[in-house]
Image 1 (cartoon, rainbow, N blue to C red):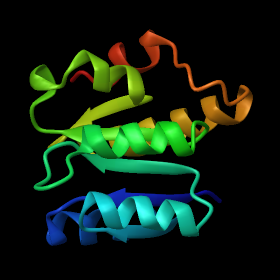
Image 2: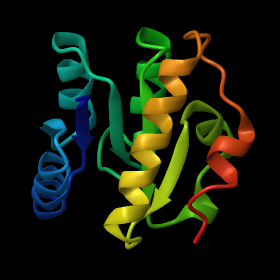
Image 3: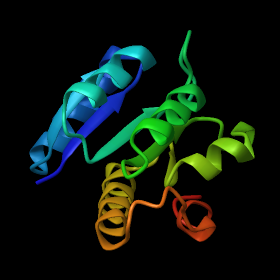
Length: 138
């Protein structure tokens, strides 16, 4: 099964997400800020990152930019409570996004889809716009 990294500055949300994903068979690493998440990706083989958008210091956009540059094949699922405020440049860097508050099934489906998509194509660093905009918009 895949190794996932969850990056979120809310410890309780991070713990719940880790428990949910581990019960589905994923190996889950966690980071409570962007720099720690980037460090973990550099030190471990990570298949996908579940990334909070709004974080103090280094936000999700800055983390996604580093990940795309250093690890273009990694799948990124952005978590946001403010989908309408997410810049278009960030949406082009991530594979999909899920609104916070969506059901666990929506998050799990998004992760499964990006992992499946990433394993079927070369790591060109480009994503189809329909993958992130047509899914998970509630």
